[in-house]
Length: 302
Image (cartoon, rainbow, N blue to C red; front, top):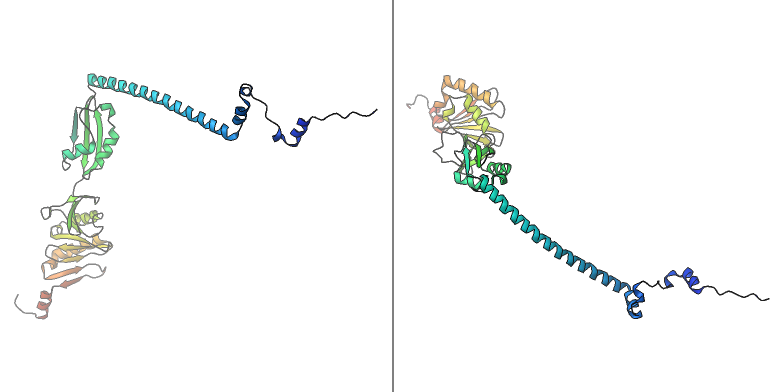
């Protein structure tokens, strides 16, 4: 009896050989759509385009909703601000006065502009730390303390910088404090009661000069200026034109020894131009041309 060959499932065989050849199962919508439209919707580009359209519409809808929310937020903020301002007005928590202590050099108008404080602003909105930092930006202010005195006052305590010398730099006379901070142009020679330092970097080393003069009050009034030489040492220029050359090291002690010797010998009253104190074991004095000529012709009346 001949064997009957069973027909193999062609669709299953094709699926095993090439799964991509098997048509996708129909979806729910495919039952109600025309065949051509259903095939078109199955194409990749069409599906991507539809996906982008859906995303775009979703974003537009979200923006519309957010816009409505933003309007509501703005209305709530306006209502809150109005209620807050009413509370401030009724409670008196608005800035009514600013008290300043310690101000001498800083102009009142400059301080008011720099602080940013305006009469009438809510006191609770004032950031005292921010106000303090702004005031510290003023040239003449070394330190500042800002605090609120409830309910309506701000108090500012200022510590100002004080000029201790005049710095001559590139033809200008500048007031400086002990840290060398430039405070403004000096009115020279009205400010000649202050010591004068000359040269690059002389301002930041002004305390050295002040220390020298404070320790030697006998010679202090005779000094016109302290000149910084190559950022290493000082020359002292006297009002009579004599230059005293100080050493790089131990200048304070060397000057003290010279002043003690000068009080006995009065060499600075003679016709000299330079006193060189840079050598540790001897000093030199350079006389003026007129003094040198007089020394070459002893006995001549003077």
